[in-house]
Image (cartoon, rainbow, N blue to C red):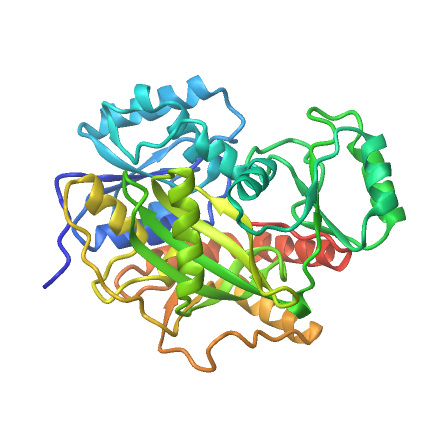
Amino acid sequence: MPLQADGDVPGLIVKFGDYPLHHGGVGAIRSLGRLGVPMYAITEDRYTPAAASRYLERAFVWPTSGTEEPEHLVEGLLRIGRRIGRPAVLVPTDEEAAVLIAEHQEALGDSFLFPRVEPELPRRLASKQGLHELCVEHGVPSPSAAFPQSYDDIVAFAEKARFPVVAKNREAFVRRARPAVNGTTRIATREGLLALARDWVGRPGDPGVILQEYLPREEAEDWIVHAYFDRDATPLAMFTGVKVRSWPPHAGMTANAYVVDNPELADLAARFVKQIGFTGIVDLDLRFDRRDGQYKLLDFNPRMGAQFRLFESESRVDVVRAMHLDLTGRAVPEGEQRAGHRYLVENIDLPALLAYRRSGYTTPHAPARASGTELAWLAGDDLRPFFTMLARFVRPGAKHLYQLWRANRRGGTTTK
């Protein structure tokens, strides 16, 4: 039986910040649009890949930085809601949007449909420190971590730490003019840490970092969980997979991944989400540490992940479709995930492949052969986003990839 969605309830892609080449937003527009759901999106301008999709009814051009006052962003959303003219399902593509929606549910509730969650929970989950504290509270493995409050704390940490260590921005989801580190940064020595830390002094939220145990990639496996949980924190769609390549290498956005059944990992994710009472779409990154046999939770994104289209059930359900079906009062059909299916992001997988081959790293936990491939940009029924991506990517994109490669050579890499 074909999957049927409520075509009277539109969807709105909500994004704050300047990142026009976002394949996840295009994937959500296509996913719901193919079911006959009218789709709208907030875009940086009229010439983004999302704005070019044949499945988009209208792009609302609203350049934002993600640093605006919440009241301004809420009023902007309400203004868009009035222009749509009927309640729409909100699909946030970044933490800023997910946190804003959760913390302003009362103001947005009459104009939009979205999972109702404890207002403070998405902010806590998106925070590196908040997530670590929740993991400790509920017995979920995560890398050991320290949260220095001053330069003296960092000096004391350096005296007893086992290097290398990893430094991340404590509130990574909050866009800043001068972040403490440029994403996930591997620090090899005590001297290197102290040299970096001198630049962290004197900034708002000083020093604003989390210092974390380094899990060596030679002894680890990168896993992904995507799921949708209903109002009772029960999973209506649950998927697991492995990350084969990312860009920048080993610590960035997924460039290539496979669907791999992992009941143990699915059970861990379901139990944790039930314990914290989260409702909605989740995108989890975990690293399996072969040294102690534990899956360690690295990131909990309280929204759809850019690579969500890797996962679809035999019933044609993905996490975005599951959310729309559930919020419009329709049953979410059960079905097994498409094991062995592959996802590939065309504009970043080639440089990632070259970097991984140069490092000699392989992914032994990935399938030897794909049962099928989903491309992030190219789709036969919706070609314009692919060519729009190429037009915007070629020159500035190549320069950006080179800058990220140089940062990775120095030991710093940028997360998704």
